[in-house]
Length: 251
Image (cartoon, rainbow, N blue to C red; front, top):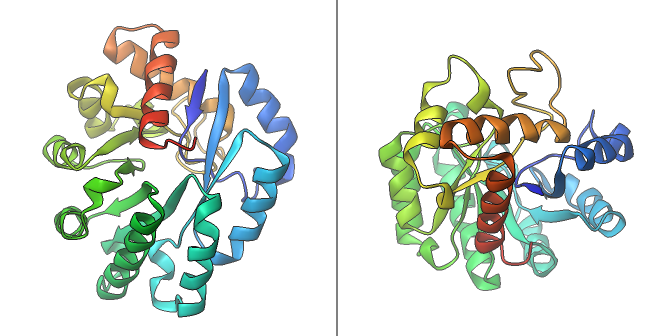
């Protein structure tokens, strides 16, 4: 069975049809989901969903988009929630949002919390690879590792993240005809260093264009990876799920 390592099931339009979508996904061979937070306002909802649906595993964190507005009280709350999480995330750096300074500060704070709680991290990194690698090394993130979410960086940078104990997550972009880097990563990196995600409701696969992504469509990405790796869908599911459990031990 497949594991979706990054799926925003707490957000519309998924939340409104959650039972239906989970049933559809389970029929497509998806058995478990990590549900990462992006803002403190969503933490309680994710906690409630995880209590109701055992296959939904919670991750708490603050997305770099909200770095400038994050408060000390919110970070203290994150510390208190961390023991109930499987990971800290979604956290990271995104240069498209402008000033990286508040993002870097927040990122380091959340890495500290993850290290204190011995939790891996789910990392969002866009156009900030150099700074990201520097901070991960300085903060000894190799002690906790984690997942590079919806990774679209170079093969060389992927290998640097792997050296630090991270694995590379592939999503629906792997199926896009004009997406060269995901296919290169899938072909060149060992299967043991890859996991899968939907990032639903975003990043729909090519066979469902201009439509909000759904949990069941993880299968499209898995099938594309199977073709690239000359493997069966069952082999892809077995290895990517084993890798997800290795880097997220509480999964």
